[in-house]
Image 1 (cartoon, rainbow, N blue to C red):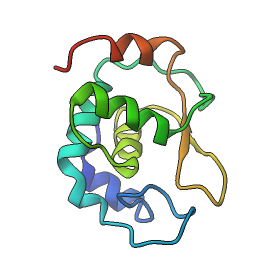
Image 2: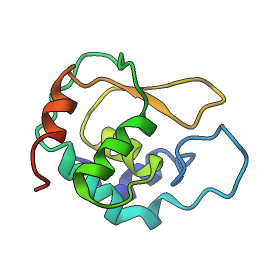
Image 3: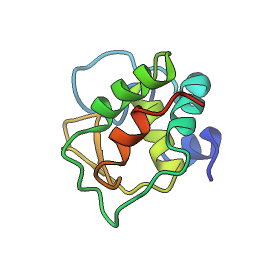
Image 4: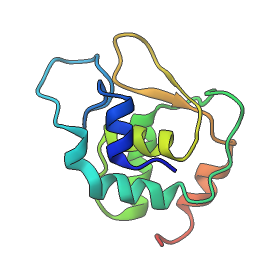
Length: 118
């Protein structure tokens, strides 16, 4: 598994807000989101992936579920970084969106959110 530092090196465009796109605003450095990345990684422990990024929802929606599960804020960028580090296939929602779609087996996310935070 990749560390947050390794992901920041491989994906220099990734920020706390996600990938470039969306409303213009100051986007915090992804390396300032270690605790959020760690929470997302705990959530994704044992994740069941698919062969391609075919989710109906986006990283932004997933981070909301992870926040409820972990009991702490998780940024979109930290969620994307955790997906990458966990080997989950991702694909941009669109060129103007900071969000990604992901390849997680349908039903796994709902199952995981019902389990207590580790």
